[in-house]
Image 1 (cartoon, rainbow, N blue to C red):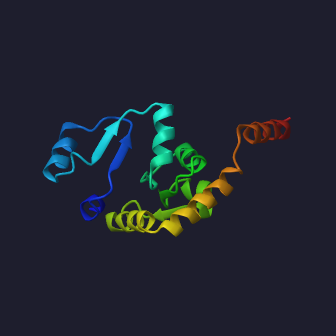
Image 2: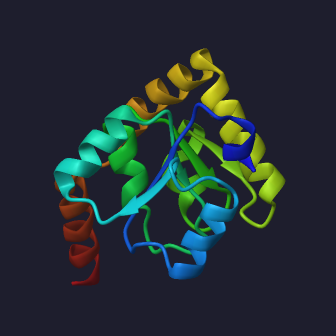
Length: 150
């Protein structure tokens, strides 16, 4: 729906390649030349995050949203499900949607890609939020938990 309404935006998915049925659906919608999916290396991901208008994460369940932190660290604004751990991770650095509502996902993608000032706001909030996370901090918190158990 979003891609049909904005002919200037392409969609890049990473991970498992599209199935035959998904490729047929894209072809029937004339989106084969604008929607891409491929396994991405860390180098590819860094480039994609830097070049993207936004990172969209329509997941229902996650243990932890590491891709959210990755996107924010590269200055990529995030558009996220309002479920799972996402609101806790991104807090006010993310624009949220209901993953069960296609119209809501469409609207939030349209808002983020269409408003440069808003994108810059979320980029800055992302940079602020990412400072709350580090492997050193994670290790220290684990040490504190272990100490409390002794």
